[in-house]
Image (cartoon, one colour):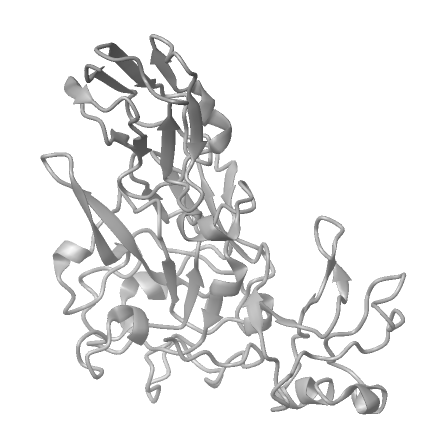
Length: 423
């Protein structure tokens, strides 16, 4: 698990020159905050068509002592079960990236719905949070002054609290700190497509800013066996989910986390995401170069810097969507009561609104039912009423209009011919 430090900690390194030679983290202390590495899971496509995931690939940037085979441009990033780690070369203002949960609704979100998630002012300290985390009876006396959070900002009020009054920080364990944090919506986004028009919804509860970590060399393998994901930092962790695109029952949530297939993706930072000197995030082409074997801050490329706000140097491709069936092409003696499963082998979810494009000919005598599995969005179940006709050749066709949940088609249609058993 990651050791998360409160979002109020903005920076712990003194201002000074480009390199702080006494730093025990090798983090840069001035200039625009640059993305050093981006780690993700790549899906390796084998010659026989099978595939396997390869986690912790450096899709952007490198790390001395890392296997060079794990440092390369990624063209087939895993579309399902993906987590993306963005490693920074210096600390960011954590309150621009995360929010804390209040005891009741305090604002209206982008859709106009009441939300309990409150922003933290730039200069707030843990003491400011503690002042607004006291019990409700003492809240009006304690939660006063500047740099306060969880203040009602809804004109009609927040439950029994009037606009401008404190609602209180959710602190059920009474430790004077927020119980729950989440990534601030829109602070960092994954955008996909040639025109970057596909904005991938994020699992905000499992996406966050972790100011821990360092750029010490070697950061992998020399720190109690930790992986680079655990030792490198500071980092922004993004967990995709498409439940906002495709609302699904709770049972299907594990298979709802996905990126669009067969496309190019990148990152987008809100201009409000800055370092302590209010400079925006940027990325030099290639990230940390392999030639940089010493301190990151000493690398010529990082000394040269990049244009604040420009992260266009970061992009990756996603894996294709493929189709398989539990009935093989030209299979004989298929049971009349067969249930056929159509699967995406890598757990990429289908869009249920497109599965009715599946056809079977000739028409089964008692009709056909086509549904996404109640527990797995990457599985379509085809059933045939009271059964299929005996000794009959059928053709099952899954066209490319049956798409993933972002409207992306599979690489090819699936056509399966099979013959049923005799009576």
